Length: 357
Image 1 (cartoon, rainbow, N blue to C red):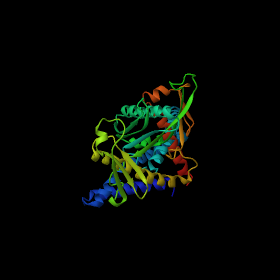
Image 2: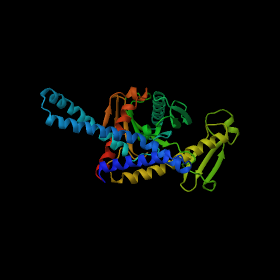
Image 3: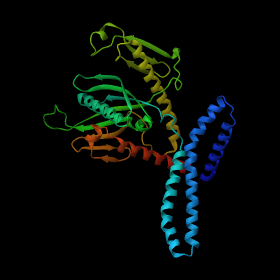
Image 4: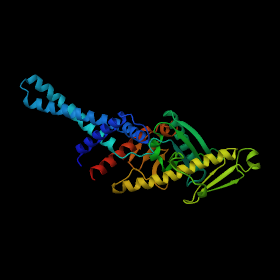
Protein backbone atom coordinates (compact mmCIF):
# COMPACT_ATOMS: atom_id res chain seq x y z
CA UNK A 1 0.00 0.00 0.00
CA UNK A 2 1.39 3.40 -1.02
CA UNK A 3 1.71 6.34 1.36
CA UNK A 4 -1.28 8.14 -0.24
CA UNK A 5 -3.39 4.96 -0.18
CA UNK A 6 -2.69 4.67 3.52
CA UNK A 7 -3.76 8.28 4.10
CA UNK A 8 -7.00 7.71 2.16
CA UNK A 9 -7.71 4.62 4.26
CA UNK A 10 -7.28 6.62 7.49
CA UNK A 11 -9.61 9.39 6.26
CA UNK A 12 -12.27 6.81 5.27
CA UNK A 13 -11.99 5.16 8.68
CA UNK A 14 -12.33 8.53 10.41
CA UNK A 15 -15.51 9.24 8.42
CA UNK A 16 -16.89 5.77 9.24
CA UNK A 17 -16.32 6.40 12.94
CA UNK A 18 -17.94 9.82 12.69
CA UNK A 19 -21.04 8.31 11.05
CA UNK A 20 -21.18 5.55 13.67
CA UNK A 21 -20.95 7.99 16.59
CA UNK A 22 -23.62 10.20 15.03
CA UNK A 23 -26.09 7.30 15.04
CA UNK A 24 -26.56 7.76 18.79
CA UNK A 25 -26.23 4.05 19.61
CA UNK A 26 -24.47 3.75 22.98
CA UNK A 27 -22.64 0.85 24.62
CA UNK A 28 -19.17 -0.70 24.57
CA UNK A 29 -18.87 -0.28 20.79
CA UNK A 30 -19.59 3.44 21.16
CA UNK A 31 -16.87 3.84 23.81
CA UNK A 32 -14.36 1.93 21.67
CA UNK A 33 -15.19 3.96 18.53
CA UNK A 34 -15.13 7.23 20.46
CA UNK A 35 -11.60 6.50 21.69
CA UNK A 36 -10.38 5.60 18.20
CA UNK A 37 -12.08 8.68 16.75
CA UNK A 38 -10.36 11.01 19.24
CA UNK A 39 -6.98 9.37 18.53
CA UNK A 40 -7.40 9.72 14.74
CA UNK A 41 -8.57 13.35 14.94
CA UNK A 42 -5.14 15.01 15.20
CA UNK A 43 -3.76 12.65 12.52
CA UNK A 44 -6.56 13.49 10.07
CA UNK A 45 -6.04 17.21 10.76
CA UNK A 46 -2.36 16.85 9.80
CA UNK A 47 -3.32 14.88 6.66
CA UNK A 48 -5.79 17.60 5.59
CA UNK A 49 -3.18 20.32 6.12
CA UNK A 50 -0.70 18.27 4.10
CA UNK A 51 -3.16 17.79 1.23
CA UNK A 52 -4.11 21.49 1.21
CA UNK A 53 -0.42 22.43 0.98
CA UNK A 54 0.03 19.92 -1.86
CA UNK A 55 -2.83 21.60 -3.76
CA UNK A 56 -1.28 25.02 -3.13
CA UNK A 57 2.08 23.72 -4.38
CA UNK A 58 0.54 22.27 -7.56
CA UNK A 59 -1.21 25.58 -8.23
CA UNK A 60 2.01 27.56 -7.78
CA UNK A 61 3.96 25.22 -10.06
CA UNK A 62 1.34 25.61 -12.76
CA UNK A 63 1.40 29.36 -12.29
CA UNK A 64 5.20 29.55 -12.72
CA UNK A 65 4.87 27.59 -15.97
CA UNK A 66 1.88 29.34 -17.54
CA UNK A 67 1.71 32.87 -16.06
CA UNK A 68 2.49 35.51 -18.67
CA UNK A 69 2.68 38.50 -16.34
CA UNK A 70 6.38 38.75 -15.29
CA UNK A 71 5.55 40.28 -11.90
CA UNK A 72 2.98 37.62 -10.96
CA UNK A 73 5.28 34.87 -12.20
CA UNK A 74 8.14 36.24 -10.07
CA UNK A 75 5.89 36.31 -6.99
CA UNK A 76 4.81 32.71 -7.61
CA UNK A 77 8.42 31.58 -7.99
CA UNK A 78 9.39 33.30 -4.72
CA UNK A 79 6.52 31.60 -2.89
CA UNK A 80 7.20 28.20 -4.46
CA UNK A 81 10.28 27.42 -2.35
CA UNK A 82 8.48 28.32 0.88
CA UNK A 83 5.52 26.04 0.07
CA UNK A 84 7.81 23.19 -1.07
CA UNK A 85 9.61 23.36 2.29
CA UNK A 86 6.28 23.37 4.11
CA UNK A 87 5.03 20.31 2.20
CA UNK A 88 8.21 18.37 3.06
CA UNK A 89 7.83 19.33 6.73
CA UNK A 90 4.15 18.37 6.77
CA UNK A 91 4.82 15.03 5.08
CA UNK A 92 7.32 14.21 7.84
CA UNK A 93 4.79 15.30 10.50
CA UNK A 94 2.16 12.98 9.00
CA UNK A 95 4.61 10.06 8.84
CA UNK A 96 5.56 10.64 12.48
CA UNK A 97 1.88 10.70 13.43
CA UNK A 98 1.44 7.33 11.69
CA UNK A 99 4.31 5.63 13.53
CA UNK A 100 3.19 2.94 16.02
CA UNK A 101 2.59 4.56 19.39
CA UNK A 102 4.22 3.37 22.58
CA UNK A 103 1.13 2.87 24.72
CA UNK A 104 3.20 3.69 27.80
CA UNK A 105 4.25 7.17 26.60
CA UNK A 106 1.42 9.03 28.33
CA UNK A 107 1.89 7.20 31.62
CA UNK A 108 3.51 8.46 34.79
CA UNK A 109 6.92 6.99 35.58
CA UNK A 110 8.72 5.37 38.48
CA UNK A 111 12.41 6.24 38.45
CA UNK A 112 14.93 4.13 40.34
CA UNK A 113 18.53 5.23 40.87
CA UNK A 114 21.15 2.87 42.34
CA UNK A 115 24.80 3.38 43.18
CA UNK A 116 27.03 1.16 41.03
CA UNK A 117 30.79 0.66 41.00
CA UNK A 118 32.81 3.21 42.90
CA UNK A 119 31.88 2.91 46.56
CA UNK A 120 30.91 6.09 48.40
CA UNK A 121 31.67 8.23 45.34
CA UNK A 122 29.11 6.19 43.36
CA UNK A 123 26.55 6.72 46.13
CA UNK A 124 27.20 10.48 46.08
CA UNK A 125 26.73 10.49 42.30
CA UNK A 126 23.48 8.54 42.67
CA UNK A 127 22.18 11.32 44.93
CA UNK A 128 23.22 13.90 42.31
CA UNK A 129 21.28 12.05 39.60
CA UNK A 130 18.21 11.68 41.82
CA UNK A 131 18.30 15.41 42.55
CA UNK A 132 18.75 16.16 38.85
CA UNK A 133 15.54 14.32 37.98
CA UNK A 134 13.72 15.99 40.86
CA UNK A 135 14.69 19.43 39.55
CA UNK A 136 13.78 18.42 36.00
CA UNK A 137 10.33 17.40 37.26
CA UNK A 138 9.98 20.82 38.90
CA UNK A 139 10.87 22.55 35.61
CA UNK A 140 8.22 20.48 33.78
CA UNK A 141 5.61 21.18 36.52
CA UNK A 142 5.41 17.44 37.28
CA UNK A 143 4.72 15.96 40.72
CA UNK A 144 7.73 14.21 42.26
CA UNK A 145 6.79 11.77 45.03
CA UNK A 146 9.68 10.02 46.78
CA UNK A 147 8.95 6.33 47.26
CA UNK A 148 12.13 5.27 49.04
CA UNK A 149 15.65 6.42 49.83
CA UNK A 150 18.46 4.34 51.30
CA UNK A 151 21.17 6.82 52.22
CA UNK A 152 24.74 6.30 53.35
CA UNK A 153 24.61 8.87 56.12
CA UNK A 154 27.10 11.25 54.47
CA UNK A 155 25.03 12.52 51.55
CA UNK A 156 25.12 9.50 49.24
CA UNK A 157 22.29 7.21 48.17
CA UNK A 158 22.65 3.44 47.89
CA UNK A 159 19.36 3.56 46.03
CA UNK A 160 16.37 5.86 45.70
CA UNK A 161 13.07 5.77 43.85
CA UNK A 162 10.27 8.21 43.07
CA UNK A 163 6.94 8.36 41.27
CA UNK A 164 6.82 11.23 38.75
CA UNK A 165 3.33 12.26 37.65
CA UNK A 166 2.31 14.62 34.85
CA UNK A 167 1.66 14.89 31.13
CA UNK A 168 3.74 12.51 28.99
CA UNK A 169 6.28 11.81 31.74
CA UNK A 170 7.37 8.39 30.49
CA UNK A 171 7.75 9.59 26.89
CA UNK A 172 10.28 12.19 28.10
CA UNK A 173 12.20 10.02 30.57
CA UNK A 174 12.22 6.53 29.03
CA UNK A 175 15.64 6.97 27.39
CA UNK A 176 17.28 7.71 30.77
CA UNK A 177 17.48 4.00 31.67
CA UNK A 178 21.01 2.62 31.75
CA UNK A 179 24.42 3.20 33.31
CA UNK A 180 25.42 6.81 34.00
CA UNK A 181 29.16 7.24 34.51
CA UNK A 182 30.85 10.10 36.37
CA UNK A 183 34.45 11.29 36.18
CA UNK A 184 35.51 13.74 38.88
CA UNK A 185 37.89 14.36 41.76
CA UNK A 186 36.26 13.22 45.02
CA UNK A 187 36.33 15.71 47.91
CA UNK A 188 38.23 13.11 49.94
CA UNK A 189 40.94 12.73 47.26
CA UNK A 190 43.97 14.68 48.44
CA UNK A 191 46.12 14.03 45.36
CA UNK A 192 43.56 15.50 42.93
CA UNK A 193 43.25 12.24 41.01
CA UNK A 194 40.11 11.81 38.88
CA UNK A 195 37.95 8.84 39.88
CA UNK A 196 35.43 7.06 37.67
CA UNK A 197 32.28 5.63 39.22
CA UNK A 198 28.77 4.84 38.07
CA UNK A 199 25.10 4.67 38.97
CA UNK A 200 22.27 2.86 37.24
CA UNK A 201 18.93 4.40 36.36
CA UNK A 202 15.74 2.51 35.58
CA UNK A 203 12.62 4.30 34.33
CA UNK A 204 9.41 2.28 34.55
CA UNK A 205 5.96 3.30 33.26
CA UNK A 206 3.54 3.35 36.18
CA UNK A 207 1.30 0.32 35.67
CA UNK A 208 -2.34 0.50 36.68
CA UNK A 209 -4.15 -2.51 38.08
CA UNK A 210 -5.87 -2.96 34.71
CA UNK A 211 -2.45 -3.16 32.99
CA UNK A 212 -1.04 -5.91 35.20
CA UNK A 213 -3.31 -8.15 37.24
CA UNK A 214 -1.45 -9.71 40.17
CA UNK A 215 -3.01 -13.00 41.23
CA UNK A 216 -2.82 -13.83 44.95
CA UNK A 217 -1.39 -17.27 44.14
CA UNK A 218 1.51 -15.62 42.27
CA UNK A 219 2.49 -13.32 45.14
CA UNK A 220 4.45 -14.06 48.30
CA UNK A 221 4.54 -11.33 50.94
CA UNK A 222 7.06 -11.41 53.79
CA UNK A 223 7.20 -8.87 56.61
CA UNK A 224 10.20 -8.01 58.75
CA UNK A 225 11.58 -5.27 60.96
CA UNK A 226 12.94 -2.30 59.08
CA UNK A 227 16.58 -1.39 59.49
CA UNK A 228 18.53 1.82 59.29
CA UNK A 229 17.59 5.36 60.27
CA UNK A 230 14.02 6.06 61.28
CA UNK A 231 13.84 6.14 65.05
CA UNK A 232 12.76 3.47 67.49
CA UNK A 233 9.63 2.54 65.53
CA UNK A 234 11.49 0.71 62.78
CA UNK A 235 13.07 -1.62 65.32
CA UNK A 236 9.90 -2.59 67.18
CA UNK A 237 7.34 -3.55 64.48
CA UNK A 238 7.38 -5.73 61.39
CA UNK A 239 6.55 -2.79 59.12
CA UNK A 240 8.95 -3.60 56.27
CA UNK A 241 7.56 -5.61 53.36
CA UNK A 242 9.17 -7.91 50.80
CA UNK A 243 6.96 -8.87 47.84
CA UNK A 244 8.00 -11.68 45.50
CA UNK A 245 6.32 -12.34 42.16
CA UNK A 246 6.74 -16.10 41.91
CA UNK A 247 6.32 -16.55 38.10
CA UNK A 248 9.03 -13.98 37.22
CA UNK A 249 11.15 -13.98 40.38
CA UNK A 250 10.90 -10.17 40.65
CA UNK A 251 11.40 -9.01 44.25
CA UNK A 252 10.51 -5.60 45.70
CA UNK A 253 11.25 -4.47 49.25
CA UNK A 254 9.79 -1.40 50.90
CA UNK A 255 10.43 -0.07 54.42
CA UNK A 256 10.24 3.73 54.26
CA UNK A 257 6.74 4.00 55.70
CA UNK A 258 5.94 3.20 59.34
CA UNK A 259 2.75 1.51 58.18
CA UNK A 260 3.02 -2.04 56.85
CA UNK A 261 -0.09 -1.37 54.75
CA UNK A 262 1.51 1.65 53.05
CA UNK A 263 4.76 -0.23 52.44
CA UNK A 264 2.80 -3.09 50.87
CA UNK A 265 0.87 -0.69 48.61
CA UNK A 266 4.10 0.98 47.42
CA UNK A 267 5.81 -2.37 46.87
CA UNK A 268 2.91 -3.68 44.80
CA UNK A 269 2.91 -0.47 42.71
CA UNK A 270 6.63 -0.88 41.94
CA UNK A 271 6.26 -4.63 41.31
CA UNK A 272 3.39 -4.06 38.89
CA UNK A 273 5.42 -1.43 37.04
CA UNK A 274 8.53 -3.63 36.79
CA UNK A 275 6.52 -6.51 35.31
CA UNK A 276 4.74 -4.15 32.92
CA UNK A 277 8.05 -2.64 31.78
CA UNK A 278 9.59 -6.08 31.20
CA UNK A 279 6.66 -7.00 28.94
CA UNK A 280 6.81 -3.62 27.16
CA UNK A 281 10.55 -4.00 26.55
CA UNK A 282 10.01 -7.46 25.07
CA UNK A 283 7.42 -6.10 22.62
CA UNK A 284 9.59 -3.08 21.82
CA UNK A 285 12.62 -5.24 21.01
CA UNK A 286 10.52 -7.49 18.78
CA UNK A 287 9.20 -4.45 16.89
CA UNK A 288 12.70 -2.97 16.61
CA UNK A 289 14.37 -6.17 15.37
CA UNK A 290 14.52 -4.78 11.84
CA UNK A 291 16.13 -1.50 12.87
CA UNK A 292 19.80 -0.92 12.19
CA UNK A 293 20.29 0.71 15.56
CA UNK A 294 18.30 1.69 18.61
CA UNK A 295 18.58 4.77 20.79
CA UNK A 296 18.69 2.50 23.80
CA UNK A 297 17.31 -0.79 24.93
CA UNK A 298 16.57 0.39 28.44
CA UNK A 299 18.97 -2.25 29.71
CA UNK A 300 20.53 -1.15 32.99
CA UNK A 301 23.86 -2.67 31.93
CA UNK A 302 24.15 -0.36 28.93
CA UNK A 303 26.47 2.62 29.47
CA UNK A 304 24.56 5.55 28.06
CA UNK A 305 26.10 8.76 29.39
CA UNK A 306 29.28 10.19 30.93
CA UNK A 307 29.43 13.23 33.21
CA UNK A 308 32.98 14.64 33.20
CA UNK A 309 33.30 17.36 35.84
CA UNK A 310 36.85 18.62 35.07
CA UNK A 311 35.78 19.36 31.49
CA UNK A 312 32.20 20.43 32.45
CA UNK A 313 31.14 17.87 29.84
CA UNK A 314 28.12 15.60 29.50
CA UNK A 315 28.29 13.06 26.65
CA UNK A 316 25.46 10.81 25.55
CA UNK A 317 27.18 7.88 23.85
CA UNK A 318 24.10 6.61 21.99
CA UNK A 319 23.81 9.70 19.78
CA UNK A 320 27.36 11.09 20.16
CA UNK A 321 26.07 14.33 21.65
CA UNK A 322 28.34 16.34 23.96
CA UNK A 323 27.21 19.39 25.90
CA UNK A 324 29.57 21.57 27.94
CA UNK A 325 27.16 22.64 30.68
CA UNK A 326 27.34 20.00 33.38
CA UNK A 327 26.23 22.36 36.18
CA UNK A 328 23.07 23.42 34.33
CA UNK A 329 22.22 19.77 33.68
CA UNK A 330 23.01 18.20 37.05
CA UNK A 331 22.30 21.14 39.40
CA UNK A 332 19.41 22.81 37.57
CA UNK A 333 17.86 19.81 35.83
CA UNK A 334 18.17 21.32 32.34
CA UNK A 335 17.75 18.01 30.50
CA UNK A 336 15.52 19.10 27.62
CA UNK A 337 18.33 19.50 25.05
CA UNK A 338 19.55 15.95 25.73
CA UNK A 339 16.05 14.45 25.83
CA UNK A 340 14.83 16.30 22.70
CA UNK A 341 17.88 15.04 20.78
CA UNK A 342 17.25 11.45 21.90
CA UNK A 343 13.58 11.64 20.87
CA UNK A 344 14.47 13.13 17.46
CA UNK A 345 17.05 10.39 16.88
CA UNK A 346 14.54 7.71 17.81
CA UNK A 347 11.94 9.20 15.45
CA UNK A 348 14.47 9.32 12.61
CA UNK A 349 15.38 5.68 13.17
CA UNK A 350 11.75 4.60 13.21
CA UNK A 351 10.98 6.61 10.05
CA UNK A 352 13.96 4.98 8.32
CA UNK A 353 12.77 1.53 9.41
CA UNK A 354 9.24 2.31 8.17
CA UNK A 355 10.59 3.46 4.78
CA UNK A 356 12.59 0.25 4.44
CA UNK A 357 9.61 -2.04 5.08
